[in-house]
Length: 92
Image (cartoon, rainbow, N blue to C red; front, side, top):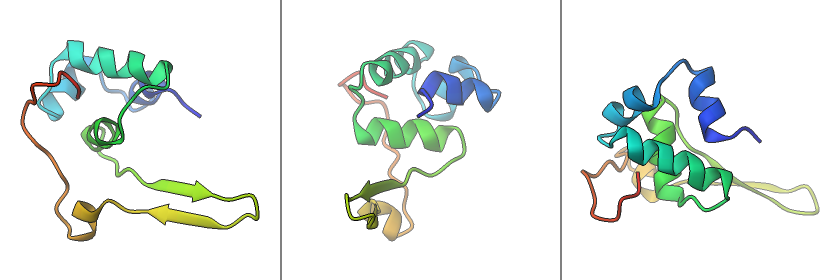
């Protein structure tokens, strides 16, 4: 699995540019990348990060029998990607 910082760099985007795209500071983007390295990033933050890079987050559950199930955010099913303003939590 690719770390978020590596993914962002591969897309040719700086932390500052990504922060501007998702209405967050460069510092908040940096924190999210560090949280990802520690395995402590919330799905909503991950979705916002990926959308800021121009992508769409899909979560896939894979079971021992090989069955795969794609979980879709309810807001995305309605065609309304969730993008709030700056929250007080400090997450991206």
